[in-house]
Image (cartoon, rainbow, N blue to C red):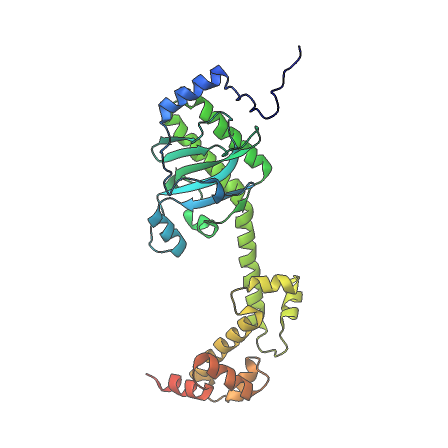
Length: 311
C-alpha cells in the first residue's frame, strides 16, 4: 500500500495519542490533579539543570537561605532533586504533579520537542529526616550541578515514567516510601563520587598543612618541596589552597602563628627575637619583624612585652 505524503507547504498531521494511553493519562490527571497555571518558585524549570546532571536544593525560600548561609541549627524539612529524564511522550503540555504527604513529584515534558528522545525535567521532593544520609553531608553539595552516570539516569527516568503511567492503580501510601527510596538511591549513587572527592581534598590539605608545620624552621620550604613530599603536582597543591592566600600565604600564616606562641610563652622569655625568627623559618630578623608587624599589627618585641606583662 502506497503511503501518501502531504503536499509541500502543508502541516503534517498531528500525532494521535493511542486511546489506551489517553485514557490512562485522563485517569491520572483526575487522581493527581492538574498543574498550576503559574509555576511557583519551588517548581522546576528546564533551565535549572543540564542533561547528565542533578541539582540538590533545600525546599522553600527560608530553607534555601539557611542552607546557603548555614544559619540556624535545624535542617530544612524537605530536599528537592532536579534531574532531566526521558518522560512519556503523552504527558500534558504543562506537566503533571503528584503529592503524597512529605513526598511530591512533578514532571515537566520537554517544551516544543519532537521525538521520543527529548528529555523533560523531574522535580522530586522528599522529607529530609527520612533519608539515611545526613543533611550535613549534603550541605557542601547543594545548589551545584552533580554529574550523573548514564545507568543511574536511565534507572531514574524509567522509575518516574512507569510511576506516572500507573499511579492511578497504586496505593498512595506505598508510593511515598517508593519515592523516598528512589531519592535515597539517587543521592547515594550520584553524590558518592562527590563526597569521596571532597573527602580526598580535605585529607590532602591536612597532610600538606602537617608537612608545613613539621618543616616550618626550614627557610627553604617551598611549594615544590611540599608537592614532592605528598607525591602530587604543584598545580594540584595550589588547588588545595585556593582560598586566596595560596601555598606561600599559608606557610607565612603558620610561621607567624608559631612565632606568636613562642613570643607569648614565659618559658621562652630569655630567647632573643632573632633566635625565634630562625626557629620559625625566617631568613633574618628584619624580614621577620616586618612580616610580623604587617600581620599582627605590632612588633615582635612589643607583642612579647604585652603578652608577658598582662595579668
